[in-house]
Amino acid sequence: MVARTWLLLQAAVVVAALGVRESNAMERGDAERGRTLFALAGGCGCHTAKDGPVGAGGGEVPTPFGKFYGTNITPDVETGIGTWSDEEIIAAIRDGVARGKGVESPAMPYYWYSGMTDADVRDLVAYLRTLPAVRKENRPHEGELPFARLAYRLWRTLFAPRFDRVRERPTEPIARGRYWVDHVSLCADCHTPRNFVGAIRFDFYLAGSLQGPGGDKVPNITPHETGIASWDEDDLVQLLRTGFTPEFDNVQGWMAEVVEGKGGGPGYRDAPEEELRAIARYLRTVKPIAHKIESERE
Ligand code: HEC
Image (cartoon, rainbow, N blue to C red; front, top):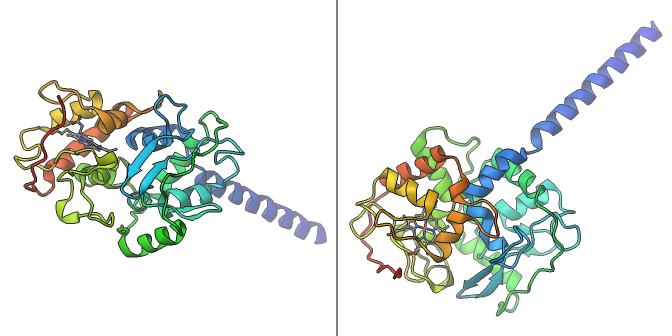
């Protein structure tokens, strides 16, 4: 009798252990799928300097509130995020809280990423862990406000938009396109203007900005005649694949970087065509907004 109880107990322990192992495996992300997310995120380009290495930090992000440098997100244990847990990395991406530092500056678009699904953010983290570890100290921000962390916390409370997190990535193409545009590829971040405190002008959603990142002009990409009403779905997909507009002009600056990826890493052009098509399809459905931004391309 005792022996049988003992056996049963052992069996129960084995089953429980298997169950735990199973649920851990489910929570760990898939690096291969994560690479696709990294591509759709334009290669998280702010975290890569012009000549690479990918993710080792040093990308310049000039803002009206000082010049920021993207941080090292390679698995280096001293200068990167090698010792961070998955949960800590996810908090930095979606909640804007960096381990040991507190609330991140609005230059990190955590508020847009906050809508990313658990599965997608885990896959992205799994991919980050496969990047070659690079030992490279983070460059301090220039012209940072006094009491910066306090200011960032306040900014987050007052001005950061809040998005509902969806449980699963939408499968219907237009909803899926919107998910990429708002929460992963961040077309909406660069192509929507901000007001003087850096809050997003949702009344000009995707309608371009005279003062985009680095003070550059960003075109209106709504289907209005002052935007890209004359572009069809294929034109948009072609731009995201090649960087060429329908007039065979090639985009430059920030847009070229997110299309090509930075430092040899993947960018939009490396994402599956059906996802780029979903983005294009969604963009055809957004509200057309009159907002003329003269092109800066020569
Ligand atoms: C990091 C900032 C940034 C992100 C992210 C970004 N763009 Fe752009 N985009 C720009 C800038 C700047 C230009 C202007 C480039 C030029 O004129 O050479 C541009 C140009 C364009 C153009 C050309 C419009 C025209 O009239 O010439 C289209 C279309 C476009 N972007 C769509 C998108 C889409 C779709 C996404 C998301 C998948 C996206 N962009 C993400 C900054 C960005």
